Image 1 (spheres, rainbow over the protein chains, first blue to last red):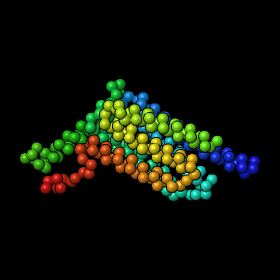
Image 2 (image 1 turned 45 degrees about the horizontal axis):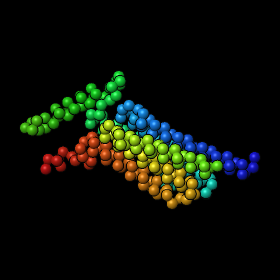
Image 3 (image 1 turned 120 degrees about the vertical axis):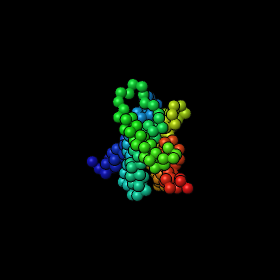
Image 4 (image 1 turned 30 degrees about the horizontal axis):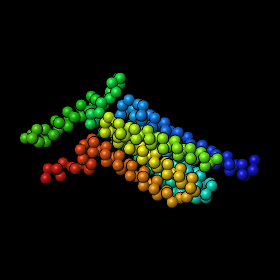
Length: 136
Length: 97
């Protein structure tokens, strides 16, 4: 196996990685259309889109490293940044949805957060009444 | 070979953005729209990475970082606004004044 064949195989593998990442992005859009409520949709949008972007950015990093002789720290920084902030943004959005009262799918069977949130709100109200007795 | 695969992935990513646009317009609650905007930003970022590979240039790497940061900040600000009614939380002694 000579060097040219090796280089072609490497190029093909990198292109396959990029294509797989694009398919994962399309899969997340499909889940975003089809799933029934906000929480399930955030599952689809957060996980598979993040993985797809990670695959595409890693493919671009490998391509620029091996074929154009350019090791890009910016691309690595972008990979790490997306890897950290994608799930955090999804979690913030789901929390905002639950606390602002977006209802779940009517066929959902289990909701552990509801009694916990109720307890927390009661505790908050009691403590604010103790702080400002005149206003409460 | 690699060129045609990259162009195919660009087409697939554009279709994914179209799917997110459907949810952005229709979405029953505000959080659906925020989430779909977040996904559109992330997919746009990967489209720019594919374009960099296609044109064999490194000048768009700054744009990748910029879109990543802007998407995260936008999603955070919008989610906090939906949840609490303000973006930057004030402490108790400030609000008493």
